[in-house]
Length: 423
Image (cartoon, rainbow, N blue to C red; front, side, top):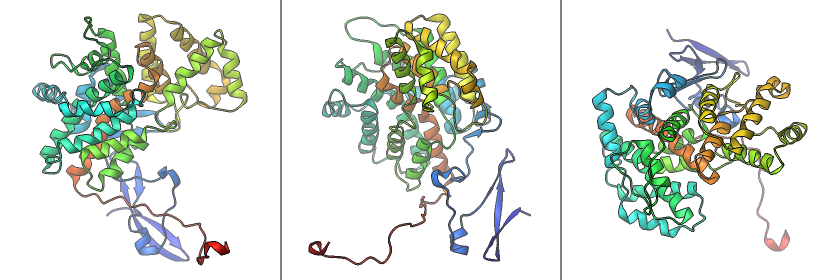
């Protein structure tokens, strides 16, 4: 017998079903609340609202844990690759050797974009933000593969690998367009992350070999970004996908959701702080004290989704420590001092504020030679497997409804039109 919750409105009792997940956490089903009572639940920001059931990932705020399909994110960063983790998220299990080989071949097969799409880059100004280019170009894929994306789930699965393959090519091309260099086409012989770095940094005039450590680092950072339950962008993909919009339109919307500084600009803010400190002769204590006195908490420290330290931050901290052991630069020196200050100052300790993933990723992306306006695009590539997993989960389940939130109206009532000459 299922559990019930009891709701009393004006003396009348209503029974609501209680759903319990495999982790023991429960939720109250209010899907028929308005129909049965005439009342709606008010939850600005949806912080207490579950959009549905999902098997993709689990974030535990109180324990400070994050798992992908039941696997601890730190375990995956240590042992897996971005492509293998992407397969896990999208299809539900770690691939067997032949499955991973086939998936990798599909990513290589689909890495080229239609040559007509190359001409589309000419329509963007040289200073166009790479995120704007990526969102537009992903949406344009709907025109090139319009006859296939709705036929069956098998076709949909193929579109998933197609998009995961092409997103790195589009991203690298947008960077080349921005700096005025010729496009570098993907090489099938290179693994996923190396292929992206090769397209990003090589030029026809000279040979270029991808730094093996950079390849390892990019795999690790993209795994950390790959999935984070119901964040704004992932939820946007699901909301758009609930209309049965095609994969490319849904993902384009998710990319656009990263545009705001509250969602995708945090790593840029971290590097800008470090640049400000360098410009002020390394006087980081004064600058941070001014920050504390103004009670302006930067978005790259702490994480509102966790009561304890974010597990992604803990993993990123170790990656950063290893990175600093391999590379030396002024910004890394400042970053280490700032990190130490945040981790040991009572003001930040008492408020559970600490350098988060965005702090570390921003510093490391920047140290790799990636410009600040590419940071959010780098996050978008990393987040793509999670978005694809949620979109595919909707289609496989095939029991979802079109999203249609309600509201509480607080505006004027019963107003009569007044002609312009009498206003």
